[in-house]
Length: 156
Image (cartoon, rainbow, N blue to C red; front, side, top):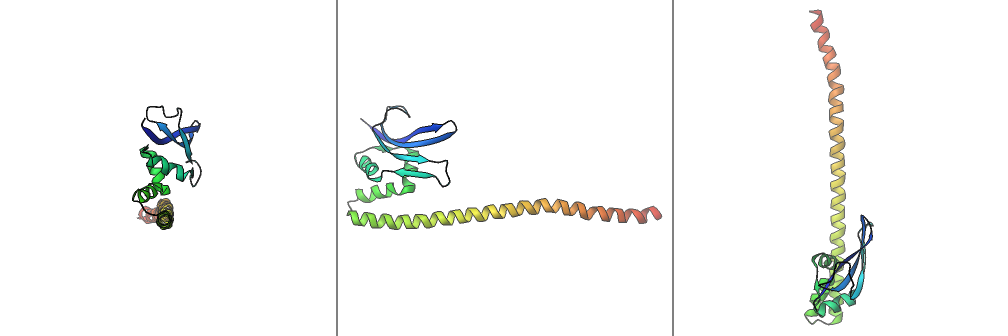
């Protein structure tokens, strides 16, 4: 039996909530599953994940395939890296140490990315405000100039 770690969709219409499950690859997306490995809620800011790390790595060691979407979720949490370290045969302490270093670096990268996005939004809003103000200034400046040029032309 070929097993797959993938997401099962739950939740309301247009408000999905996902459960990470181990399922026989021939079963339907929301069908019967073998094991529940956690959940993922993308509709809160920041998104919420609650994963059973040890169980996920154990299923990966047993040979369970990981779907593309589940892989990206596990990669963001560092579980793919943890599996690779354990597969190399490193001691548990070394795995934990390297994983802690990776997570510290990952949090710094996320903070830098959010700061860059905030700067970009601020710059975009400032450019939009400047673009709105420019036509208004041009309209105000053009009205007095036109009335001043019409008076001498009418007198000649």
